[in-house]
Image (cartoon, rainbow, N blue to C red; front, top):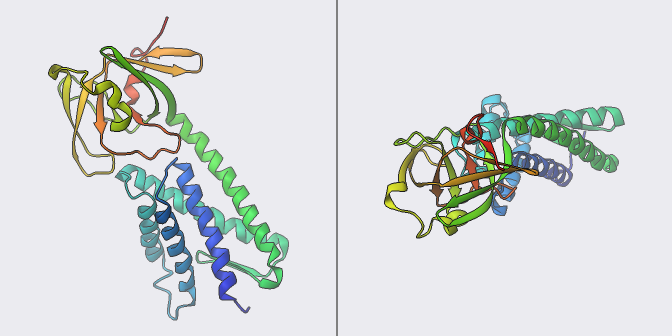
Length: 282
């Protein structure tokens, strides 16, 4: 089979863009545009390694694994170790689903082409079939994405909350992270983390020194560090038409952006919603 470089490049560029986009969307993660383009370009160029003489090493499982981790690191550059490892597994899963779907589509359509070693190519005389293969791949991976999203929703939820401190209050979107284990080392209260810009309106010039806490942590994109926190007077969790009061907690301030696609600016500790710690508002 004769392979035309321009078709090979275009087909893999489209496929790699879908893989990167779905991986980011699954984790509700935003990344810089140039990082997305860089990751997709590297993936596409890597597909040409099948034409390199003696390329067995480049196309070996260890080499592909290392390359995949590099791509995920580019896309999830500011994520902690937990999210990075989960994103890497998701990336590999979506890649495998894409390859399998293309192979199946080529077989069903009886089209001349290949889908092997992380590459895709459809013979130019059947170029319209490329669009069918891409569409079929997107459809099946989309279903795969929806199934995984439903599973994640069982563990991680997005809720509306209202924080009160003194005479001030603010409403925000919060992400309930079951992996958040931060506790106030002094009082043992659960710690939620908020973006500084989002919570500045209620904490600025509105707390006394007795409520300030120093929270050691090893997440939010860094190996370790200390966050400044403040005890919150009230927490109201809104779920549809119902409202609940959360148990006493500490709000730690993070000088950065979480990058959630849903606009969440609070990472909520799951203990705040545990049975017995939440009471329905009257």
